[in-house]
Image 1 (tube, helix red, strand yellow):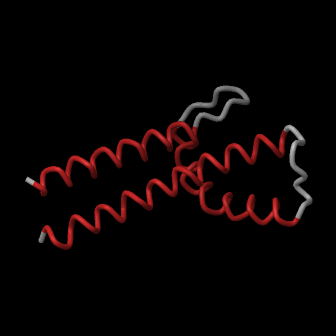
Image 2 (cartoon, rainbow, N blue to C red):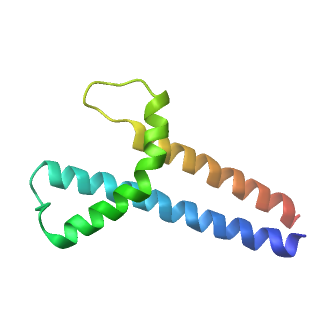
Image 3 (cartoon, rainbow, N blue to C red):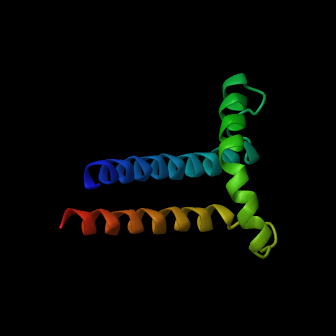
Length: 100
């Protein structure tokens, strides 16, 4: 059981880590576009932005339904990153339990 579960939990942890980076990059890219630092009509920027949007927005929309609005400030990425961090800590604790 441990032979299969520990690597599976490690893969889930890596996927969560990659997803958290996707959230961070999506937020930074949206700031760069909004402050006219990068050109959204550039094909590469549009492709990366669209891919990140499709990857991150479903989770952010679910959080936005529950989270109250704070004017123009969107706190949903912070909440999503906190949820990911919590899940990673839970996975780490489960791994420790199985390694004993």
